[in-house]
Image 1 (cartoon, rainbow, N blue to C red):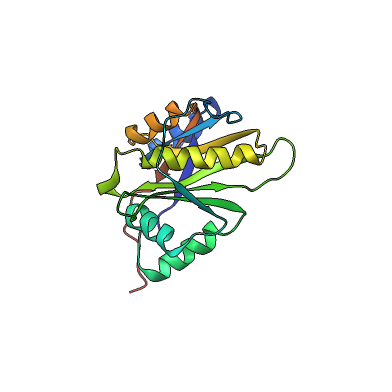
Image 2 (tube, rainbow, N blue to C red):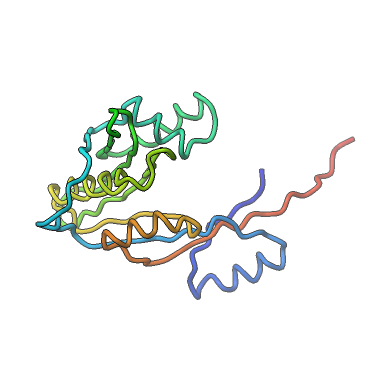
Amino acid sequence: MPLIFQVTATAEAAALNTFLDAEGFTTQSETLIMTRGPWRQDPVAKPRPAVELASAPSAEWLGVWWTVDGRGGNDALAIARTILEGCPAVYALARDSAGQPAAVGRLALPDAGPGARGGLYSMATSPEARRRGYGTAVLDALLTAGAERDLAGYWLLVTAANHGAQALYRGAGFRESGRYVYRQERPKRHLTGC
């Protein structure tokens, strides 16, 4: 397995990046960290598709998410489900006009009490359902669920290459508060005992 570092874009990481550059490490998957404060729903909100909320991911929820972001077969999906269920969360699912699952998202709730924040994860819209408001409806529903729990704010991670998702999040008041990259060792030919 290659050695991989997750390096946050800070002045303190400059020396590490210089070292990794000299060692030939590649730079991959630049990711933005976006945050926002408490959610206050617009009193004149536009009509949105209905969203179903649950405390666990349904088979349909997992199907949409895995089709968009999954990597692997049923064994990998079972492991992913275990990770998703590792902390309390709210799972949102929007359906298209034919009743088919169209978009999903997850609000992780790792903390409780005053000052608690929630993390938005697993936002995914089926390719055939994109640009129809389903992702926005899921995001609004999760932020509203967080407001009902008096969350002090939210965070999420989005790849720098995903401009559509960034626009969606900025429209909901998220702003970039940091970024990171993965620095991966180049494959090396290892000596064998033969």
